[in-house]
Length: 177
Ligand SMILES: [Zn+2]
Image (cartoon, rainbow, N blue to C red; front, side):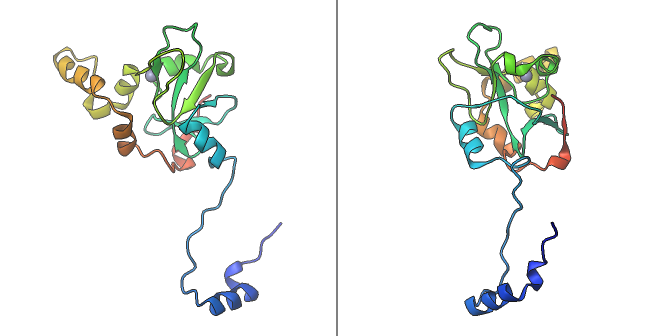
């Protein structure tokens, strides 16, 4: 279907003149396959979203992206005690997880720190390494104290101020799952 050019659409232009509307305003084309819906946004902010499709992507900066938002991922399976870390980037653990079926192991996406009955979660140091977040480098011995401090002081709000949560252009990411 070809839509008319509404800038040239006479009935709209007449209404615009009658309203004395000078500017056309801004609008964003919404595509639910690419843009978060209101429901998804609130799920990411609250209980988390199950990973059940191919929509999780890795940005050129190695952050994790779902549709047009940066996200973190974490495991809600109380049996997997080793996975009490949440991931923000394409770290070694995430690379390993890509080989598995995530929908079977209760991995979820969120935009806030996970809080579940399974307990506390910490940011994954492998992710900070991958991003070189605030010059974090756990491999450099002489840099160790500094890196430990970055890890300890990690704050998700600060992270999202450096890597804005939303909107992220699809052009800068590639599907990996
Ligand atoms: Zn990680």
